[in-house]
Length: 549
Ligand code: HAS
Image (cartoon, rainbow, N blue to C red; front, side, top):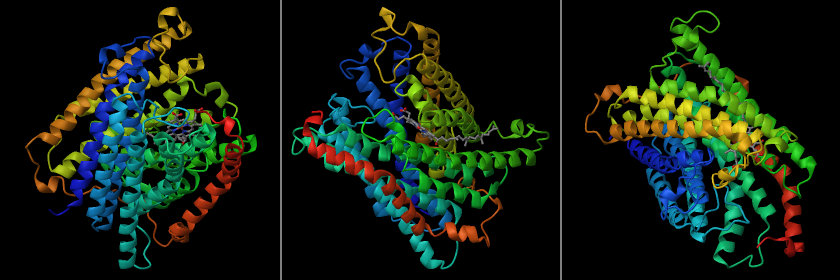
């Protein structure tokens, strides 16, 4: 075959969507719980509780699906841009690592021995196989990161003195960001979770504060690990799909460099309510969180301007007249446009969350769930769904089945998620807690104040089920059919042209010194984490009575 790397990309993507299919089926049950309706008894004895369902939902959708899509698509696009072949042996090793990890984690999840939610930090304890499986899944990303970096270095040796092409720049900074970000989780699993759950160490307990701090070292930047493949596609291909050009290549580099620097040193914004971390460090993490919102604000401008350019090329006039001229009937484009629209309130809500004092109003309420359904369940998932309508035909050579159904699924997904996000944010402000089995209390009138937004959740749960059914029909009907397109219809990767390129810019050369920037990013993370981590660790050793377990 001309491009053997297509096969491994396809395997990653399909396994990812299988995870999404299973995880998504729990979504309506979650939504109905938040409408006071408990359908979990229907799943017994397979799934025993709301919490077990919630763990499966969060792990499969947020963690497994997103990662697999990234591992499939990002190195693939990089390889096609550079015209080099990725190390296929290592790519397949990474795929098998995820599969084995997934099976290992799935067994205790399904037997209710790892009902620890997708944040899985102590004091909740799961079966060791869950943690070992999760660790394998994460370590497989290090293999993929190596594949990406090795391709880049190989290209550099063959093209001395040349500036890294844009997609490769985005891919390399992305994987370096993730290498730095994932250290926290790997240390948490290797030093604490695995020995503790196996019973070979920490017999008198682990300190949840140490474990949580290591978890959130990874737990915030992981959201950019999910998000940035969308940005890569939005910079590299969306302008072309929409009929225009990317307005600025250097600005896209600024965005990815900023994510490398600022994604990780921000985790305390998930721990404002935790004792034992000084308010000074919490404030510093707040400021850095506002810094990491900047590359998204730049993206709003660059992607927005590129879309406006496309709309005007297509005959749009006036201030907003370019919007209806965009190719809304193309399901890939529509998915991206709707995803980006959802990201506007999602990002604004994130800034509310990050604001030290406002966080106390929303922390641990349904508001936070509303926030991340705009971010990961709409922005990321809807974009991935949209991209798959292009990707599947591209990778398999088979035409997209029923583009009309694809388009409808995208709209329904968007509408369902918007209705649900509105309901959840509203419920949060009315004091409804997150991740709580509230449907068992509905009869007693607990949370009666939230009756109206609860209706939103019920409606959304049903709409989303229909959307998912339509989407997965299109996905699997496309994948499993025997029809094929003419070769020239699907071979090329439609990278966008740029209006303003990287040529001759000193700033681009400076940004290209990726090793230097990685060093600065590492130093920044150590500065904002080590004083607190060392202090917490000392307390843990000095006062074992404080440990929970
Ligand atoms: Fe978040 C909690 C802060 C982004 C996901 N977040 C979560 C959790 C998840 C999550 C899963 O500071 C819950 C974790 C848990 O279970 O406990 N988040 C932020 C901030 C941002 C942010 C400041 N989050 C994300 C992304 C996620 C995600 C991205 C997933 C992919 N988040 C928080 C905080 C908490 C939190 C606190 C803890 C809350 C608590 O108390 O527990 C920023 O990165 C957001 C920046 C984004 C923007 C938006 C820019 C707009 C764009 C769209 C432009 C539109 C165009 C369309 C171009 C500033 C780019 C034009 C089209 C036409 C048709 C016209």
